[in-house]
Image 1: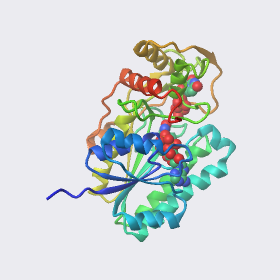
Image 2: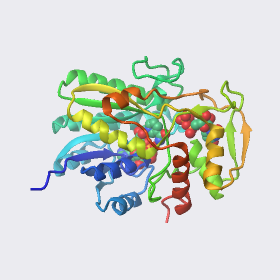
Image 3: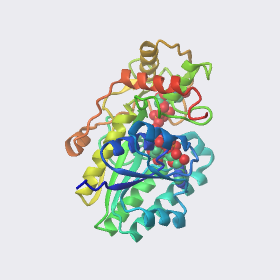
Image 4: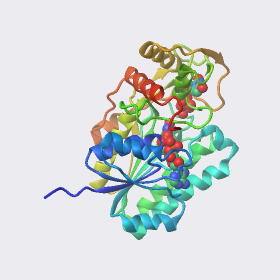
Length: 343
Ligand code: NAD
Ligand code: UDP
């Protein structure tokens, strides 16, 4: 008799982190159903996941806010639990379009929770962010620190959704919620078939670096070299996206056997500076990355990194891929897909 494969719904599953998690889930014996409205991704990702794993996830091009179509997904599939990646994620854009961010990120979560309740589905893993620690806490961040003031509407959507999920877990003792606070995911699957594919000018450091290296952008501007850090540039906890994806598989295992709400940092615990990233990228790839120093970016903190010890102790998860591997895999993805998923 073959073992039954549990089915998980991945909202936003064709996005950067969702696609890598889909691969790890399938490789760990799960059946994956993806709902993504393709606002910030491509359906080519579904082909790529199939190419990597040999299994094609079921894909619905729906908006998670739309309860009628979402209900259909739950009717057609026996969903065990949900990983909720879907959301708008650009910090700068959220300052210009706050209502779109609140509407999309909050509504999608509420619709999902309501439909899960209808179908008595009680396992929920949420993509939160280190940004909820705010400006007042010193690094390394631990999960028991009080949340802080976010410097932008995107961050507030994450903080508010954490609160919504906390209240939902109090009201429904059957609910199991895992909040995963991501630090700075970079890198790509080592096949080079899936990776980060930002639309327009990248906001984040690593895609900008790799687009300069491939010749799509002229030079990187490093935002500030007068921070109180060893080389004056900002420090972050960069984590390989496949390590992050593996953290979700562990989070699902945890959610299956626990009730209530629990928070985990997904980071390495090792901060690297912007200059470390640029220099390691050039060293590993042999490609040139031109850069100049510019003013600080509004809202940026000097140094942000995780204390990941709770994740190691409770989830049995630890990031294993180093910065060289992160750079190598980013470059492999960028070289094989100079224009991302566009044909
Ligand atoms: P992404 O934009 O690549 O993926 C998000 C996906 O959600 C996209 O494919 C988009 O089309 C989809 N989506 C958005 N709104 C939707 C809706 N209403 N209905 C259906 N699909 C919708 O982003 P990512 O980097 O993979 O991030 C995934 C999650 O992790 C997001 O919630 C993001 O806020 C969070 N997060 C990301 C980072 C990071 O640095 N990438 C850091 C912390 C947290
Ligand atoms: N950064 C930079 N130039 C860029 C993009 C980012 O110098 O074009 C810096 C940014 O100031 C921060 C670090 O790189 O110190 C990481 O920024 P990113 O936007 O990738 O992630 P964040 O930590 O802001 O979520």
